[in-house]
Amino acid sequence: MSGIFEVLTRADWTILGAAVLLLFLLIVSFRSRSYVFCQYLKTMTGIGLKPGEVKRAFKTGGREGVRELFLDLIIREDLKGGPAAIPDEARGVEK
Image 1 (spheres, rainbow, N blue to C red):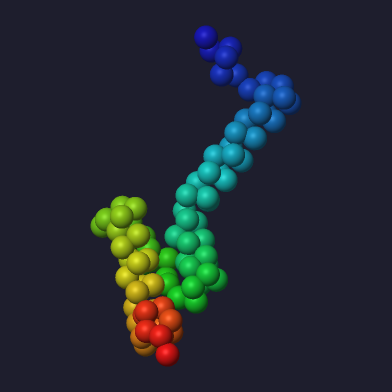
Image 2 (image 1 turned 135 degrees about the horizontal axis):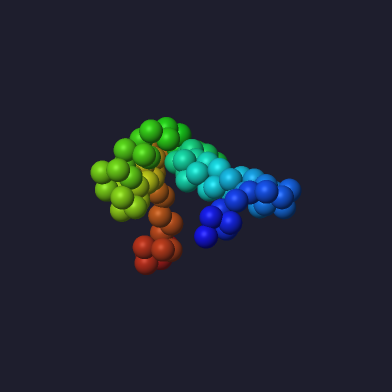
């Protein structure tokens, strides 16, 4: 049984190195989710958000907490622009 866990050949070291590299990439990808979300949000909507705020929202409410934070920010940004102009034709009023 101890022969299974021995790292003797170059191929064994290569496989072990590849496994460690994949584990490292997995850890980095999970830790960078909030940063990438903030970049995406800034690019798509123009709303700047800090990764710490996203992490806090995820800790307190999970996915739903982040979704609520996102919707709240979108609504606030939309309200800054004032009411939307509705054309008369859309209201059903004819001239």
